[in-house]
Length: 107
Length: 111
Image: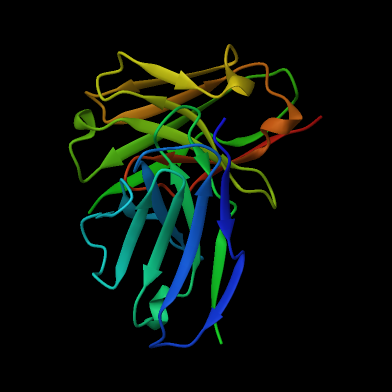
């Protein structure tokens, strides 16, 4: 199975700042990496797939980059609604596997 | 608006069966592969199974292979997960997912 290592597990930032979250795969997954957002009381939301393709409705302040084993989610100019938990997931091969999550909190 | 609504969860004894359903609306269900993902208490997300848009292909994680069956009825826009021979380690919130996710349904396996 492809192991997904996500870091940091916790991140504190202020609105308006930019942050980056890293996701590393235990072997190459080409560009087949998705990012999800989890917020209390809401359903999980797909933000980005195939490494850098924004899902319809994802604000342009979100961006994804990387290929092979190293990937990054960047959120520029944080908005209050961006404080949430973020997960990466590889969709290159079965079993699909997730990172352990990054909790982004307001500083 | 896309909606995925799971049902069928509950408390079940080890070794027994349960069938989850996921009613989809707001999109063309028959165009999309669908999956079940679960999250045990205080644990991370774990993919369970995927079914292709037309039901012709299915994929399972090893720990549920032979015990769980994913299926779909495109005429009813509904996804299913038949869970047999349930174990305590299957206790989790189960989510129906494609590009959108449902709210989840809790399954507790305990005597």
